[in-house]
Image (cartoon, rainbow, N blue to C red; front, side, top):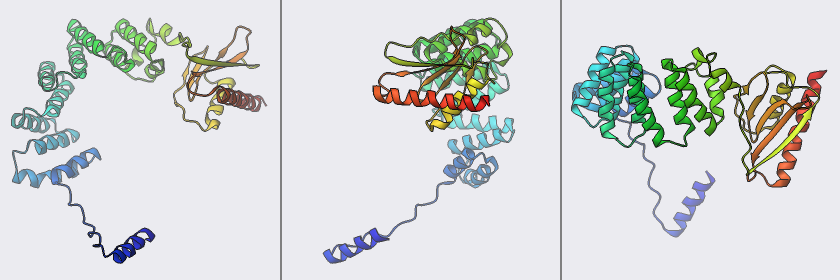
Amino acid sequence: MTVLFLFAAGSAAAGLAAPPPKTTAPPPSPVAAAEERLHADDPDGALALLAGHLKRQPDDPKALFLRGSARCMNGETAACRADYERAVALDPAMRQGWLSLGALAVAEQRWGDALTAFARAEQLAPDLAENDLNAGAIHLMAGDLAAASQRFNSFLEREPRSADAYYRVAANYALAGYAALAARALEHAIALDERSRVRARLDPNFEPMLEQPPFPTLLASDRWVPPPDYVVARRAYPRRYDGPEGKLLGAVLDAVQLSGRPFDPRVDATPDWALLWSEFRIRVGTNDAGQGEVELAAPATTFPPAEWQRRTEAFFQTVARQLALAER
């Protein structure tokens, strides 16, 4: 109120025109409102909004596509497919329509139709790496490993430094039951981003084969070596690392939470070591002398030397306090 009062008084004193009155934004169109309803997981609300609009404009491809999506959400797959097909017939450049048709065909295991739909989507955006991933996944589900591998390799050639790209290929191979191929792709993903390992532990796509070779060895191996531009600090404790449910890891988790710093809630834990990520890479294990050891690492540019010393020392002291509390 103060700002408005001062502006109004100043305007009057200077003889300036008053600011224009506020206007109310027009309500969204039925199509836009229906799209919002779908994003809110309300297909029935979207259908109600689209009914009148499609009665007036039965050949609106966007409205037909949205109605199809609402019908799919309600389990009306035949009506959904009819709307998608009508939408892309009216607007062949609607890439999302082709993708949705392809996804529906995949759900119904119509592999040929799925490949056709995704091929039309690829023609509309040929430079997108996801084209290779989509086609590879469908070939794999259809049982054509050679064609799938060719498309996956093309996908990885486009994304050679992406851990996520290798991870997604690994997940597809895992879902289809190809343990060796899945492990090879996952190993690349871990080399690019070691958090891919704990991601796989928690991913249902990998669950059926986590006990199959070579997964146990891969998931139990921490091969990370600090790069030359990293700083590392270590502290030994009288309590050995005693597994994921042990007191040393519990004390480290307490220290992470008590620091008030952002942290990744995932913990990559094995019987021999555990990894956490906050402002540091935190490794918990047992050193050669049989003592518990906590190792902190971070790029040297993250903290000035004095700040690095202060923060690591504070963290180590908090771990010691929490461990002492746990030992009582």
